[in-house]
Length: 308
Image (cartoon, rainbow, N blue to C red; front, top):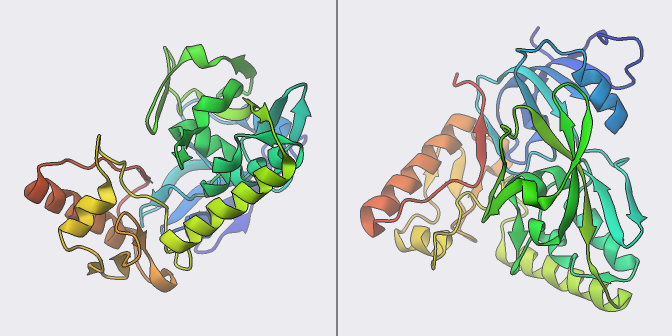
């Protein structure tokens, strides 16, 4: 099979779409990478749980939201990808908390909270991914981080069961989240979360969102395919400053280039760059910064799949 095609569902009660040989460039913000053997687009959270129950125990499994922090290698992904982002992801008020499913885009959660008179969610508007991705990496910007606001989470287990967990069950740090005693991303994945925000003025919160989005537009190369910040900021410094100090702005490999606008972004103009181009460029930037500044940059993006 050279093109994606819809294949028969493994159980008659499933309501989603199962695709074979699905090009992952369609599901990543870098707009490059190989195909997944299988990709499932669940109808809703219950359908996702039902689908998991049909998988063989040893089947490799990956959860993908907006693909805004992900590089899929050119050889593609062996196994199954769960494509979680959907405009139908549930968001609602659960008492004093904002409940949002993992497939909801983070900026939508920011606006949802603001329009209901809550403050403190505005930073989520600057995170170009889903709630699931934000939870998995403790995404943050403008001085706030996702887990600062988490009351509890709903986890989807490999066996299709759903389980609530509290923040005390996780080790959480800067761009790092680990579920204690369980291999997060192997046996359990984030399905939803309850967020706590303080009461505030609707107009003020919406104005703050508009301001943060404008700051993002001014500072980041949003017009070109990118995956957000490539590297974590080292303690007491900024990855972008170190990269720029090495004279790497504009440095290109194939179709991939270190952004002229923000040095911690790698852009893929026109989607012409391969995943190999981007991965090589990531390695070159790391090696150069280490050689000149003695700082080992840690990648913020996740790299998966097979090399071609």
